[in-house]
Image (tube, rainbow, N blue to C red; front, side, top):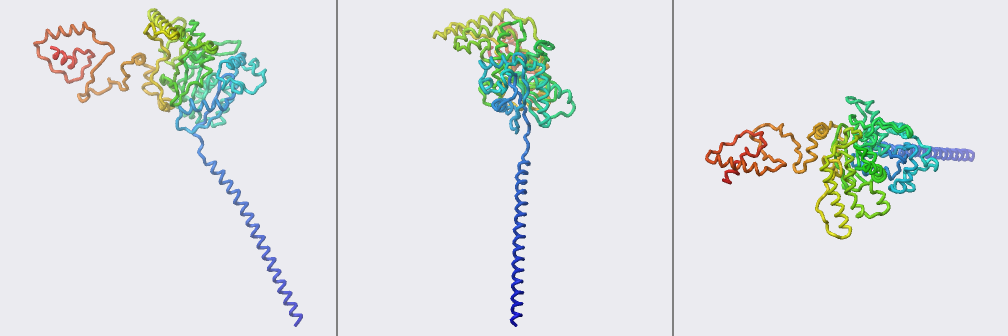
Amino acid sequence: MGTAKHVGALAVALGVGNVRRTATRITVSVGAAAVVMMATVVPASTASASGLGSDESPPDKTALILCGTTCPTPDEFWIESIKNQFIAPTHPGKDIDYVGVTAPMEFWPITGLFRVVLFAVGPPELWGPGGPGWPDEPLWKLSGLFDLTADQSLKAGVANLEAAMAANGNDHLVIFGNSQGAGIANAVKHELAEQHPAGNTAPDIDFVLGGDPNLPNGGLLSRFPGLYIPIVNLTFNGPAATDTQFKTVEINRQYDGFSDFPLYPLNVVADVNAVLGVLYVHAYGLDVSMAPGAPTAPAFQGTHGDTSYYFFETPDLPLFGPLRTLGVPEPVIDVFEPFFRVLVELGYDRSIKPWEPTPARLIPPLDPGKVITDLVLAIGEGINNALALVGLPPLLHATAPVARAAPPTETATADISRQLMSKDTPTQTGQAMSTEPAADTEQTSTDIPTPTTDLAQLPETDDVPKEPQTTDQEPSTTDETENAEADDDDVDQPTPAADPAPSDSTSGDDSPADAGAESESE
């Protein structure tokens, strides 16, 4: 019996031990399974989070931003300024990613000299210490004596821009260029036009350009097309293309020496003003803005082909920029500036459209009487300014009728994207401006608004009321006397009934309104 009890106790002990070992194995297995599950869940959560990021919609467009000469790499200030002042206003509602593009932006041998001069008179945000006009390079490189020539820099810049385009898909792009950057963009646009001629599918690429030396009318490289200067290796490659599938916005400023160069270079005063305009207008390209609510709104000059043109007036002549830099008070400059503005404007023909390729000419077709009148009035304005300077009342009451800018078609408004970025064909207004000589009449007339509908195309029906016709010229006293005499002769005759059909005559003598007025006077 005792032996049996021991055997039974041993069996029970062995059974309990097996149960404990089994429970231990189960616990270990459950723990291992929990660890495996946690290891599986954590990567899944991470992958899910990254998946949320990948599900975010890509931007509508990518803007590739170029700078200008002396500025190889756009900094954050330049990119933000271009975004807020030029690209976002012309692409409202678009989600755009902004990318700076590095290019040489050199012009041997004057790059270094240009930097030094702009350090003295240019905006400090660009050419002050730490600005993009002073890249992080050794002094021997900043001197400009070891830079690329103009043509070499342009070629290298085109390669850099094309590489940036390829890195961003070659589609859904906005390319901004200023100064030499605009020249690079124009060269790329020309290549794109050759690769994608009209009638073929083209990528979604458009351009926004400022201070463009290839502007058809005014650009320095367009004023002397085909000219080549061998020492600095500079080719004047002519006007920008306007007949492509790639929409473009041209932003120009009055007296910018690179984009508003005089048409008549024999006018030395206008030439000097333009050269100084490179320093006092061109270098200050960020002083203007296309954004709604900007202090100065540009004049919309029209759309031709693929390009829309905007023009900002410059109230102060760059000719007096050095005096302003030296601290000469503006009221003193105002004594002389009106006279010199007349001389400067004689170097331009503001009636020519900005999209018309216009090489330089020798002698302007002057009207001596008008020139003398303008000069006399400008002298009178200067005298009045001098009197105001010393606290005396004006002596003369006249305003010099000098054109301060290219005649605008309309003033740009906040909603300018409709004029700029439409993928449709040019509007009838733009076509009329580019093909019909009547556009000059629209620009010179300020009393009568330009109709938006061709009256000649209206149906001839009695349901359409006939509007009284007016002209800019009042009827002469002689005509009124003759009409009165004719009325005296015909006083006994009955008044004929008015013809119900619309009359094509523009004379006021035959209208029923005039007949009624004559009867009342009798």
